[in-house]
Length: 632
Image 1 (cartoon, rainbow, N blue to C red):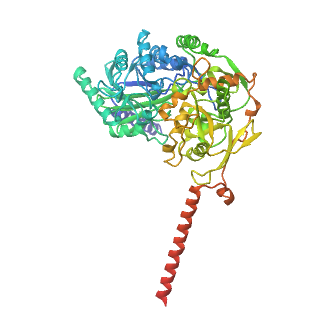
Image 2 (image 1 turned 90 degrees about the horizontal axis):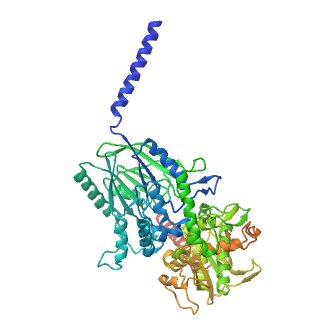
Image 3 (image 1 turned 60 degrees about the vertical axis):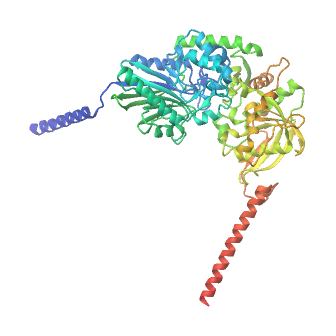
């Protein structure tokens, strides 16, 4: 019996030894390397409340604690960012003058970042001012890389010597080579097609991401091998994006470009719980606003990498704040109050109103066609603000899902909360404009909301001054079955006259969207912004119709909302507890509802259906007659 037990034990020991030996044979060689990454931070220096489930996310002081925990284990961990480090909170107001975002990243030890589309929200003037301010601060700064989105060169249209001087002063380049404990990293930046579309006024020259990426990668690898005799780990900081299905611009980039080891995928605010492996390239994303610190660890054999570990570290209220970074953030709040908010008579954390209602989250604003009480507040605020400043009656005020960046929390609502919700409030996009639309074009704008939103969620509109309904089961571009002007909380309803001009208020972003409605609707819906005399306004000239206060200052979207909330006497009006019927969305196959106020699109569709039915009947009868003749 003892012999049998000893024999079994010996077999187990031998088997375990073989397993260990086998594991040792296949375990990759080389030390484990760590790359820490973020993207789409959007000036979220402070923690923010989760819109669903409670708790908080983000905050640079907490993010710093997570970064330090990895550096304690691996002091040579690389720290990079995928762009859109600015625009999203009150701190962005100091972007052109103080370069808070880059200086904060420098203080946190970021090695490299790239440009996102929102870095161009202040146009070229703002960008070059920011770059100069960053360098003039004397603070440590991250390197900036971008290979395919650079200013026009001398001799090209739009050339700006000062812009190039700012790029050179900061040291912006296509790629950089960084050494960490004997390992070399070649890091380059790529700007995507959609990112370029989102920065129409950047003034930059956009070049093909794929061809430039391959060219830049090859140059970086060649330099590293020539100078240092080593092949580098190749990292692309891409502001291009990954879609929910895992595909997208960065998927195509990885598929078409040889030699990239890791793509940090920014722009689309994607969260990848696992890396996507394409063509030996790992695509990684860690979510927006510093919600997570991304960590990818791998072994490098001198030619390529093999994944060792991947983790998204949640940055929330359970993580302690780094005291140094927390103090720095507080000091920058003072700068914002002094240099920006003082002009409006507000302070950073000033409470405007108490809110006892639950408003839509940003995802809910986008997800379905519906009336949103949150967006009702925004459009009502725009209408009120322009009427107060101009003394003119505003017929309709419009906001769009695409400009909503946050909700209003329950409890105390601060100036900072409002700005975060409408954070396009600085720069050309956040200014309110006053234009005129004919009644026909106003109806087209309402139809745009009903028909285009399923194709483009950011195009969902929310209006003050009208009420309308639409049936989602109706023909596209004929979904609206009822629309009226509405005043004084539904007490007064007036028909919309196709030929009359109506004074309409919207943000600059919304105005540009209206101006491009023909393209958005494939040429079917036209909406022409006009001046008071009825003359058409070109989209590029909408800046001339910005509403200004008595001191000549542009009226900002965020300020209109803040001022409206501040006027409510301490509590958000009860009328915003529930939808008030200004937009009714329903689905019905009832023939009466399908045909009510039908337009030419519905009648054409009916005619086509009847023609198809007639064709089927004719063909069926022909077949029957042929069979009868055959059997006769």
